[in-house]
Length: 251
Length: 253
Image (cartoon, rainbow over all chains, first blue to last red; front, side):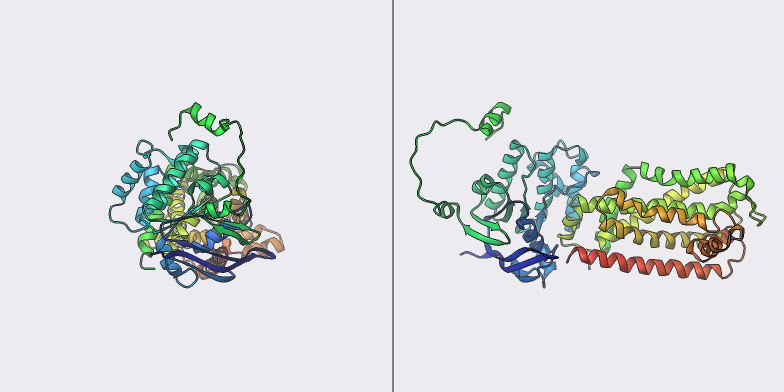
């Protein structure tokens, strides 16, 4: 039984004379990871902002968890969590205080316990009492994602979650995202990295000049090009392999 | 809206931690008014004749308090700007909370932070000889006027906080507010000014507010100036609030 948690049809949005979205259509099934792939300025963030009720579309329909984003914004906000392009953590607060803050705003019963559990799950227990300003990029992103998980929203938007992260932190984030989808959360991911979409997504849509120009599974997309040729090439480790083995990253 | 009060309390608690963890913002808010206070009492004050029969520090205090608030609200714009720039504003706006509590928490924090700065400046004033024979009622009147004044300037500060593209731009709006008291009855009687300047000084909001606070401190009758002062402050408050709401809605369009 499949059910769409996100449905977008004919979405249009202009900023002044600039038409950013010119009729975007896609749907995301429950519990899957959907990647919106596109270069900078393709309109990925605009799509996410409309779905997160931060922007109003000029035309078209968008719904999340069955609620229309324009007419039923309050219900949409109860069903989603947004992890924006920049890790939106409060730098003056400690990691734990950031989590407690979000738990309180979600009106949960024991915000302190919720915070402690998430600190442990994201390997931030030792750093929990330090101000977020002192965190590395990867730690900030982990805290940011942990904040998004509070209240177990069924839909999570991750807007370029690994932009600006080092390779290790990137793998950490990938692990977290896979875990989420494994737990039944629906993930809409935007990225400009092809390998990220390839690694994570059940379905990939390519957003180009305000429209979705392709939408399918990785296998479907690769079939668009002529069948694979068999070539013999020397298998050399990539620089990423070298880097990761030198710094001793796990996985 | 059913969570408005609890959400506002939660977010105000967060914003107040920004104030208590960067006490330098309280100190720098109080520093400039204190510098003006010392400069005018000990350097220029001797040459100024107020013709009122009260000591110059008593004459000066109301204007210095208004300058304190004008300096303090620039931090409100700055903190709001940082929330927008860092993505926290969007994070809060995409959560199931009473959305307006995000702005109100900054406004309430501004009231608390400015209150502390005002107390610090007043204490320095008392140290160098400020005295008031005002009764409880008059003190409550002064507190009420300063509260209303802070509230109006804070809602003005929300506008650059929401629209600025740089931290400097977010706080620059406060410079004219800081200098407005100089062209008013705050430092010298308006009667000593030449025609057009005098006209401006007498009809701009600061003079009526300063005259009212000065009368309350002196335990004298406030006369009609209190109604002019209240009219200005309520008018500015309403206009700034409406302006801030327009800017705020436009961000979500």
